[in-house]
Image (cartoon, rainbow, N blue to C red; front, side, top):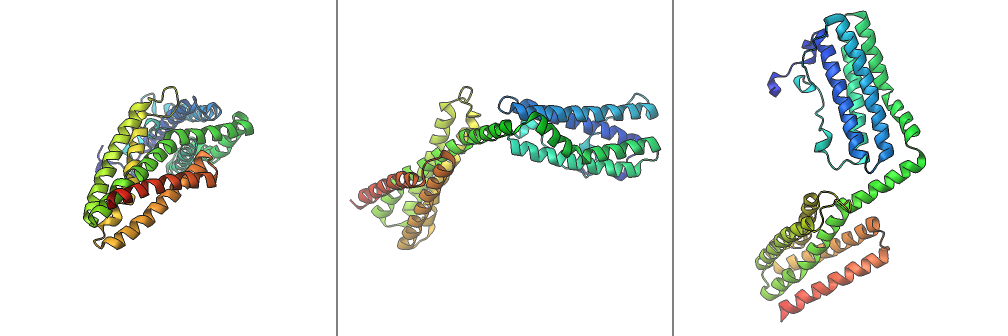
Length: 323
């Protein structure tokens, strides 16, 4: 159905409102079940929480179906959330991979708020007393659904389990995002320093340095991206989808090189060189911070390792370009 053809909520009959409510509960039940299945391998305790929430939604759906059948018979018309304007668009679980704990919790909170508002508005529209009471009850239950989720979390997800899962979530983030990104940023920032500054000192022309730097950055990004993607399929190491890692690594490699290449868009050579050196220092500082924050490398050690490596490459470029 096209966006312009969507029904307004106020135009729905009581029969259609109940049918929509049944559809919403079915969607929520399956969404929570998908979350549970997606989290089960790495976050078993949180998966149990979402299993419990899926059961809650299944109970709501059964009550709605019983109420519908008592009033309107067994045939339930097909009406979905995307047929009615005003609903927040939700992405299915398979579109928001990899599933992270915080990402899933935020999505679940949005679902609960939206469901509560729907039942509050639906109850105002209902004419049948029993239907209105049911919708009011469901609105109240959705209002307390977050409390129920917390109860399930306390029941299924003790303090130790929650800490373990938070630690596991951080490890997965480091493995799947930080490591390939950091590898790319280090390679892009380091490997392109020599050709960019060699071209700059050899020609004393900003444009020549920019062209060399751009070519080196994009070439390194493509090369590193494919190398990362083909190095490990993630099935044993848990490092995630290889092409996602490759994309992250390739983009960060290109970004690392383009950062100190962009200043050479400045026509005046000495000004461009000064800006490029400042950018290099900031890049190396950022790499040192990431290594310290995510890889647990001591601050001084991270700064010395990154700084020494960058300085040697920088000197190499200057020596070759000046010879």
